[in-house]
Amino acid sequence: MKIAAIDIGSNAARLLINEVKINNRKPEFIKLNLLRIPLRLGMDVFTIGKIGPEREKMVIDSMKIFSDLMKIYKVDHYRACATSAMRDATNGNEIIGLVKETSGINIEIISGDEEATLVYENHVAEGLDKEFAYLYIDVGGGSTELTFYENGKMVYEKSFNIGTIRLLNNLVTMDNWKEMKDEIKKNIVSKKPIVAIGSGGNINKVFSMSKTKDGKPMSLSHLKKVYKEFNELSVEERMTNYNLREDRADVLVHALSIFNNVMSWSDINRIFVPKISVADGLIHNIYSQLQHRK
Image (cartoon, rainbow, N blue to C red; front, side, top):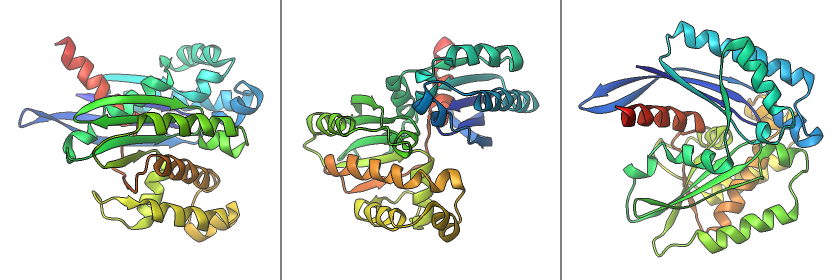
């Protein structure tokens, strides 16, 4: 069975295609293709309230490509979800209609809480030590989703309108940060030591740059050190010194500020980065729904 997930975020759109095979009665998810297109919808939406003509065309053209790729791979099931930028865009539903007409793709606009749940669908914490509590931190362009997991159960989830594209455009207020801090201090508490699980393209990039072995955590002190290094460089210097694309170099420092604040306020000093995403969660969600229907 082949399943595809489309995640239309505030910074980029991703198409993930997986083949699911049953191995020892358990599903094995094999990645066939991952395509990322930096649409940067948040650049329009968080400043003018809607998606402008140029980015509207990029969305429509990208979805045609995604549709063609799903046909080539003979995808059996898919789900396309849009998050923070499309939620806030006054013309979001209009563009969704145009996408349906031109490519046949049905896009759902999902809430921040559902976005947090989709990250949780990856079931990463199930394979980790029950002696700890876990805070999933998913940082996107428009929002940050926090999901707190203790004793094998999700006990708290919340979406905050603090994201890298919003920060890039100076659209996050002190009140936004205070709300996040107060929520964390009130809800992210446990008698067990808490560790973080990070997701999103930026933390994955920091992890790969750190040369940390897969399955090993990065320290908060390392994240603070990288933040300091990057914050002192221009976007051009970050691109040159670290071989980064511009659409990564300009937001990475903002992602680090979010991770550093969340971990500091939660008294967390280690973060695992298992290469999970909303798209991965979507794949697992589609598979679970199909099994439930059986």
